[in-house]
Length: 261
Length: 261
DNA sequence: GCCTATGGTTCATTATTTGAACCTCAGCTT
DNA sequence: AAGCTGAGGTTCAAATAATGAACCATAGGC
Image 1: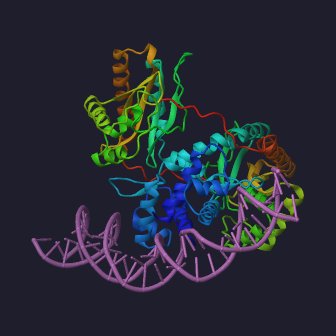
Image 2: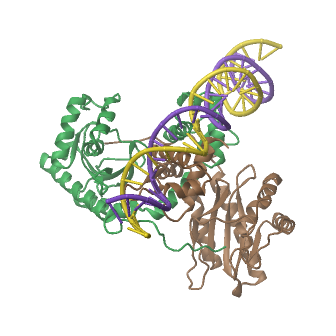
Image 3: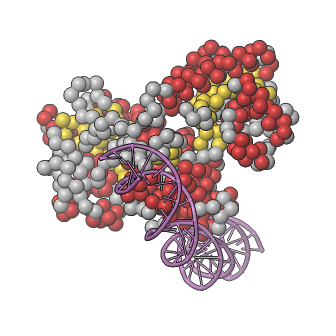
């Protein structure tokens, strides 16, 4: 793997931890030599991608990604386009609706709308959605080129609940169903007692870029209801795709850049 | 320079452009060979830091920084702490107040509050503040270790207006005044007709991490008013610093990570 | 049909990365 | 207090990955 790739993986690993870590830990977690890890961290720090706490000497994600994210969002406001659709769907379905985005080889939750009722599914922004065990993951994979499906199913598949499907053959079956139906269903794949339906948001070339998913308590959700959620998820996902990629295909040529002291 | 550094510089360059660019352009802008630039872009793309438009083949910032930024902000919500202070100051001063953060060797605007009046200074979130020509830059430098001041003043200093001070000796004078007074003043340093006062937000070790600045039209701003803005900026900056770094110095050990399908 | 400019690729050369061993320091044990 | 342990951090010869001139492919302009 290239040096750049290794450094970015380190950054990724660091982002995945829920606390700050020291040099030795991060080296171990990334399977890197301590000296190498240190050089990476120093280099990343120079550019603001990591920060070292001056007291504890531990490392954390720096502020450069925040700057880049602001720039990207300013030019490419996916959430601004997508959120209204998610909100509408959360109201219509009266269940939790979440939006995920494919980034860095993973599907991560980028927005969640809770319905106004006490008993609902909790999803955290930032959480990673395993491809084989979530409705979003299945919906995403189902519309990917075969090579990527193969790659995803070659990896070890964790069994999160008694119901998690981990047999690649069975998963391929689910993907075929999903592709035919337009939306996926995850029956307690990641968490017991939760059922979800998801549909992919697709770029104009057909490649999925993320998913819209409705997650509901299994106990109150009928087959009819799930099918309905799926259809609604498809509508929302297509709506986002059309509005986002729709008219203005060329996104360059930004507005004027004003700047004052 | 290390490969990682070069790749991150490429990313930085890409972020600084206000439109998408092709391979040849980005190679030229980064003084890299086309083949090298391409390898960097491919590697960065693998990790989601850049994206290539499938039609135009041009490159833009990807979604990975957005993910990292969310994680950082979740753990380290600088803006959530700082914004109330900026808002209060914008109301109290009835002028534009902006907050900057040091990242990747530069000071960039991360939040702006406009006062509720028509004639006001416009500052854009994301804009870069030159150290020698802005109140924020001067306030930041004035509280930096001498080595960093030297480094900043060794670089070529652009003359943005007739009033921009570009003589390193004179700038050192301004920095001394700033350090003594606690806040800096920029008299039309970046833009004619604009005067600003700024104070640094400092980490517990004394190092500045960003600045609070008040920017006002020169025409309606008296010496007394600017001194008052300066004092208010100091109060806001200290308030942010205390609230942010104050009680809970150890930031690790995040709350529980909930995750549902 | 030719010219030019673009994105993209190759592979011998070259420079950078690598990691075992090392140093230093702080806290703990005896 | 001496010795131990494990942390962060550093060194430099050996190993490896980055480099870029030259290349191909394609698209648009003339």
